[in-house]
Length: 534
Image (cartoon, rainbow, N blue to C red; front, side, top):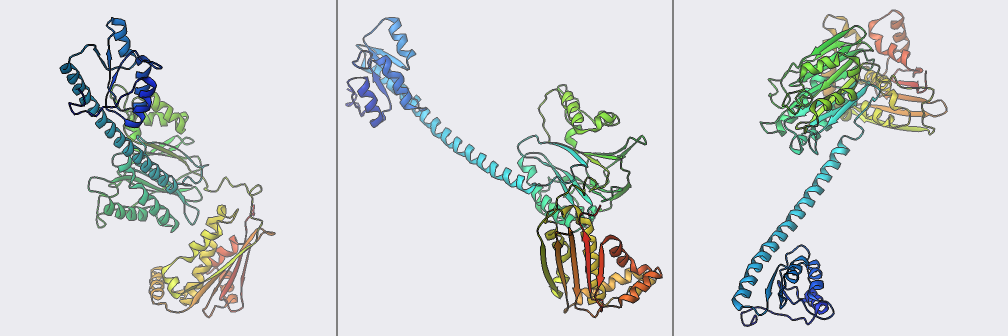
């Protein structure tokens, strides 16, 4: 009858045979008897369902049993319907069509689920890749842990807040805290170009205002019109005695001095980054003299805008009252109070908070216990006129030197020594500038204007920088040689004895270095510096 009606039919004489037939033929519907040898219908039905997996396999029991318990058991073991013998052809057809429609829907749902699983796995993989990139981009970000405490809490997998920390070439500590519009991956995308450019500009020793200008230009080019980055850029002098702050579109910052009972609010002075064109942008920064006991608190607006179960915001007033109590000036205690206030309400914005203690950037260095390289190091490079005009060899040399074990903590001092020697070689050796230009009222302006002009016209000459590390002495030696005619070293020393102001660089070398030696004609200086000096 079924073949006559156009169905493809395969037969099995018992339950065991049915399982084998199913594996080979994969039928769309099973008509199953109850009474069979080897495996009866009650045992066969659940095994067929297991073979079918997630796709709906209609199992219709056809049985001569008529008692209610038997029919109920047919459904309990996995049957989807039943027909009692003898049955009518029309009813059988109706049941087959009904269950075929359900199976068709099941197959479509199964295919859709497979596609969704594929896209879910693909998305998860993409997120893993992006997360890996973000982690590598910010790896090693947190410098000077003795001065910093912070808490970062993204509202989703990716953080639209950004916190960057880097040491400048002279040992100053730079911090940027930013908050991109929105949260999640869309907001986090802008953090990658910002971070790479921040690190690059800090290594050049730019001011916080100049860094803000550069990042603003980058975001203007990258971000759509409805996105921007509220940001604070902070520079702590390596002595820990002064702060420079540029802030745009950010919440208030708080400078706290418990010893003198002072609580200073630092308000945002500018528009957020990524909004104004270059000719409208204001790079002016605020400068503060600070003492060792002072502490700067910086945060994003997610902290003050978090709500409790009644829809009330945490707010600035509640935060400032807490921060005026020394106990709540510690980040973990602030976060505990924040969590208590919100009562477990789901966070809908990224939350970041940072505490900066004003102190010497390298004050945690224990010279007696610090480990220094036991291997000798030496290298030499010569920069020609074109490289002198277009690059900063001092920074690159210091980058290489501070990779050596024990040298990183002396980065600022080493940079000062080498840059002073290099600039003397350039200005007085190759460019043949005279310090006497500085004697007039506008002397310094004239001096550096002439320096820029001569540097742009420089077509010949070279400067050689040699670096040697002697592990037995834990001493570094910089030898800087220029191709110029040199100068009279004895005359220069005589100027210093007469307290000539132009000898500042010479005095600096003498005071910081362990040794300073010039050659006879004055176009070479060898500077020694001991790393484990107390």
